[in-house]
Amino acid sequence: MRIIHATDYDDMSKRAASYILERFKDIHTIGLATGGTPKGLYEQLIPFLQKQDLTNMHTVNLDEYVGLAPEHPNSYRQVMNKLLFNEVDIPLANTHLPNGVASDLEEECKRYEALIHFLGVDLQILGIGENGHIGFNEPGVDKNSKTHIVKLTEETREANSRYFKQREDVPTHAITMGIQTILASKEIVLLASGEHKAQAIYDMVHLEPNPTCPASFLKHHKNVTIIVDTKASVKLTG
Ligand code: PGA
Image 1 (cartoon, rainbow, N blue to C red):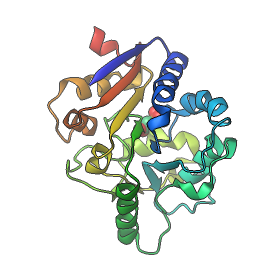
Image 2 (cartoon, rainbow, N blue to C red):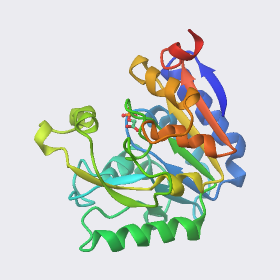
Image 3 (cartoon, rainbow, N blue to C red):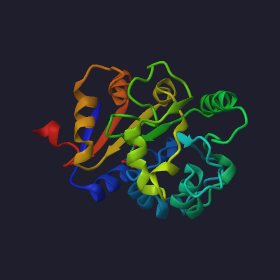
Image 4 (spheres, protein in one colour):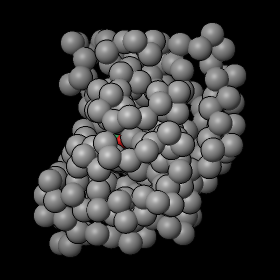
C-alpha cells in the first residue's frame, strides 16, 4: 500500500485528480464511488474530461441502494448524474450502476458482476466508511464475495441519513460489488479525509486482512494507493 499524504480535503482531491490524470490514457474503464469523499475529485476532473472524447470510456459504480429507482433523487444513479455524468460528454449508456429495483435482485447481482469482468476495471476509486467498509461491504463480509445484496449497518444508515429527508427513508439494503470484485481491478485508489476516518485508516493499514475491517482486505492487492489528509492519517503519524 502506498500512502500519499495530503494536507486537507482540497489537497486530497487535487492529488487524487493528478494521480488519475497521469494514468488517464490507460484507463478505459474506471470504477467510481459516491459519498462525500470523491466529490472534490470529480470537480477537479470535470474541466479535463470536458475536453476529452469519452465515447469509448466506461464507468462502473461500486453500489446502489435496493428499492430506489434510477429516477429517485437519492439513488446513486442520480447522484452520479449530478456530480459527474451530466457535466461531461460521456454516453450515459456507458455509465453503469447496479439496478436497485430489478425484479430479480440475485440475477441483477450476477449481471453486474459479469459486466464488470467483461469490461475489466483499470482503476477503482474508493472511499472508506468509519467502520472500515469499502463499497457497502460491511464488517463481517466474506473476502471471496462477488457483487451481492447487503443489509446496511445502522451506523452506515445513520452516516448516510444526511442525504435523506428523514432517517427512516434511508434504504435498509444495497447491492454492492464484493471484496473479490473490487480486488479484481488493476489498480485501486482509496481516498479519506477527516478525523472520523482516522481509526478506519489505522485499522486498514495495520491489521492483518480480516472481516472486522473490510478495507484491510486491500492488502491482498498489489497496486493500492491511499490518499489521506492530515486528519484522517492522525493515528498513523501519531
Ligand atoms: P463518505 O462515505 O465519502 O460520504 O464519507 C464513504 C463511504 O461510506 O465509503
